[in-house]
Length: 315
Image: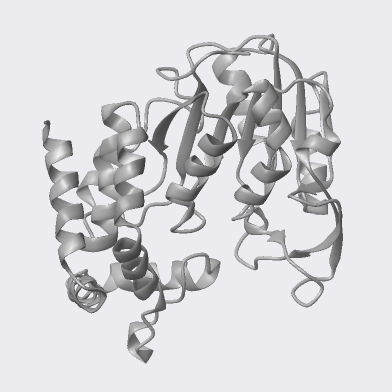
């Protein structure tokens, strides 16, 4: 057993022994020791994006901390299962760093595991080469992921790229940024687990955080499809960063995941539960995957957590 194993199992065994109220009290106590400037920054961040619950200590709103405590207490065994599914030391250290940040506000471990060597999503230790790929980019934004892909693997690495983006103003920038490349299809659609129409819920902080909502929360109509319905050819890579709708999009791409075993690059930080539910969902669909985590976020709170699901045998 190495030091990461020891640290992880010490943490989860501690959480198993404590009741919810004690875990909650311990997290609140640790939070009170965080420098005031950092606490203010964290609270502003949580309240702007709204993924994990609100936090406003001045008004006794600790919803974000309560949600973390609930997840840690009720899903300790799910985190142990995930830890055992992960295939390398770096991935295990990342998972430990995330949970220890939740519980102890440990910033150092996150700093140690941040991937500063490679482009976001494209870790060459895990994905050493790409060729003749059919890449599906859900949440293509302004083309940053596609450009990183091409910078990493070259302009001859793909056969076709599908770019899905829901925000009209962003689509025009996306098309402009990728205009010099061939065989890129731009899809002004959302990918989910149903076919129809919905509305865009706009985030005032950044259009990159816009997501599919309903008519009560937005007034921009958007067409919704599924990966299985919209793409009929074989897919070799799927990347997702769609503001919490990743599980729905995976359900909508079930046939491709089962039949094609594409490389999957999935954001798993928009919900506390995505961290273990998304790997479980993929494994239930198709057990032909090895799982890795890579971390591209900051040191204060764990965001930009990427699940890299690599097929054991390429179909």
